[in-house]
Length: 451
Image 1 (cartoon, one colour):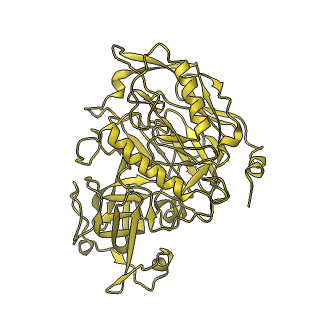
Image 2 (cartoon, rainbow, N blue to C red; image 1 turned 90 degrees about the vertical axis):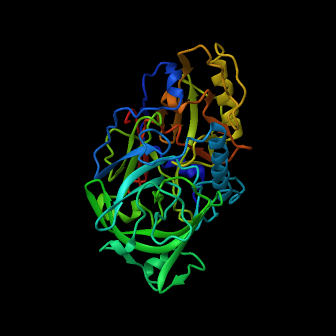
Image 3 (spheres, rainbow, N blue to C red; image 1 turned 180 degrees about the horizontal axis):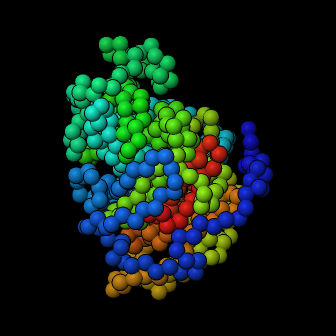
């Protein structure tokens, strides 16, 4: 299998490029009011790159969300859930070659019947399913392949804002038979068969699950229609109590939306996660590639769901941290569902120290869960924070938005227990960037200021 050094040799043709979010001075100004929960939905300013199909994207707990969600969880609860997801991912990529988390070499297998964590997902899109189309608001997840919605009848389902999908009311609905190739492709033991209909089950890392009939129907993405879209028609679920109607899998496996629509929109998609819950972003299928800085995408045939990249270095205030490249050798995952970016221990320690050294004007504050680099911003309407940039293979430099650096009053990064462990690039760090997953060209791209 390819070693990391061999992988790096493949990157020599990439030029040094920078995705600037804001200016490139060593400090950025952040209004402390923007760190508080938004009460009003602001006018969308999203500017997606050209693509085949674009739908709005919202934070599930924000005022722009179409879901009548419960009150936003506390930061403590968000971080607790987030740790469950991150720990699950790290376990799945651990120990294959003596180094935890090697994206390219991992022998760990994540079956299509397993998902990362349902209750950490924060962003939703609205689509239509069936003929006539029934509006469904779905969580998005790059760490899942199987998409599903709650269907009638349902023996054990949570309440939702939209009408529950009724297969009998759709003229284009079709369940897969147990003998179909599509059913076999799910690749799960004990798949089950009810009245000759293929049954699916997805067990998530946080203990939640969904099961029902694997089916196909017409999917409406804005003005675009996807015929014979494959999804789970859920008749029972557990461990999930939000108002969303289901999940849209954006992983790299055969069952994901991206794989299913590759023939129509191409093997590329992108999204932009807004800076705050009070603003909007977007999801685009068939995204264009111009205007992005790019880094090679690392994939594993044993674990096709996840999208890997190689983080090489971190810059604070324009200066690169003195961290050996070997610390990042296990690779990194881009993940829409993990909130906080996880770094190897040495890398996080260096980042925290450098950040605190440039924040001496603000008193330290008590840690918040896994966030231990926190500050007291009392009495300040705005704060000056040092820039943070992530440097990926191919020397693609991604300058983070201020909202991608600070969460509440803390540095929005956390450390893993050891070096040589997998990095997870979480959704806070992705805010305002259009993140491109170009599977066809084997690249991940970043475009600043897209939403």
